[in-house]
Image 1 (cartoon, one colour):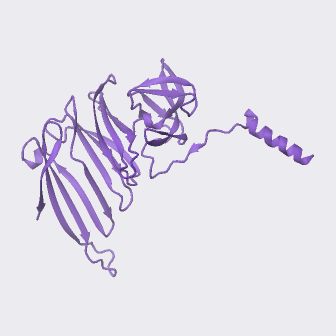
Image 2: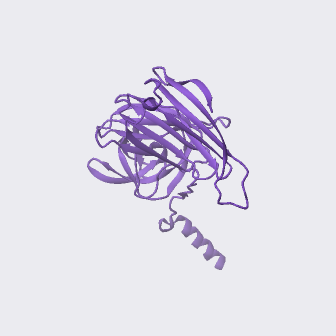
Image 3: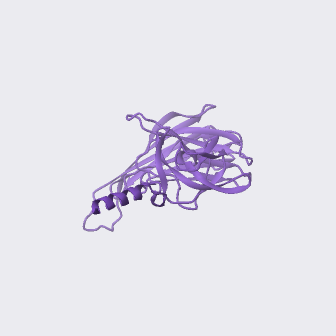
Length: 296
C-alpha cells in the first residue's frame, strides 16, 4: 500500500500545474558571456526585426515584433533555454519593452540584441555592435561582429563587419568620441573585447564615422604577463604622424623581462624592448598595410 501511495504522489508531482518546473536557468560562463545581461541593464534590437515570444522558445507564441534600434531592459540576471542559432548557442532573456504605447514583458533570444551601444547627445545618432553569426569551422572559429549607426529616427545609416577570434576575453564595451581619429571623422566609435587576466589579450577595433559611412581603422591589441612580457599596439593618426591625411601608423612595442632579482622583488623590472612601426594607407575603401619597419 505504501508503495502505491508513493507512486501516486510522484505522478501528481510531475503532472500537476502546481508543481510545474520553471525554465532551467542558462548557466552563464563569465569567460564567455560578453553581453551585459544583468538585471535592469539595457540593450537595443540589433536586427531588422526581432520577434518577442511568450515563453523562452522559438516555438512559443509570437507576442510582438520590435524594429531595429528599439530599446529593451533585462528583467533578470539569468537567461533560459540556450538555443543554437546562426552558429551561436545563446539563451533567451525576459525583457521589458514598449509596444503600442504600453509597457510589456516577453522573451527574446539574446543574439538579436546589441552587446553595447552609445548615443551621441548632440546628433542623437545611435552607435551599437553585436554578433551577426559565428563560424562553425573548428579550424577557423570566429564571431562576425557588426557595428551599426542609426539616425535619431532609428533608421540605419551604415554598418561595417569584422571577425573577432574569442580567446577567453571576459568583457566587452564601447566608447564614442568626437572626431579623435582621421580628418574626416565626426565621431570615432571604439569597440573593445577585454582580457582581464594575465596572458589574455585585449582587442580594440575603432571605426571612424564621417556623417554617412563607418570606416574601419587598423585593429590593435595588447597583452601582458606580469613580470614576464608585454605586447602593446597603438595608432598614430594624421594629426600626429604628419604624413598625410590618408596615412595611419601602428606602433608595436614588445617587452621581455630581464633577470628577476628574487632578493629585491620590489625593484623595478627591466625589459628588453623592441619596436615595429606599420604604415596603413586609405585606398578609398579601407586602410591597407603598405610598409613595416623596425624602430631603434
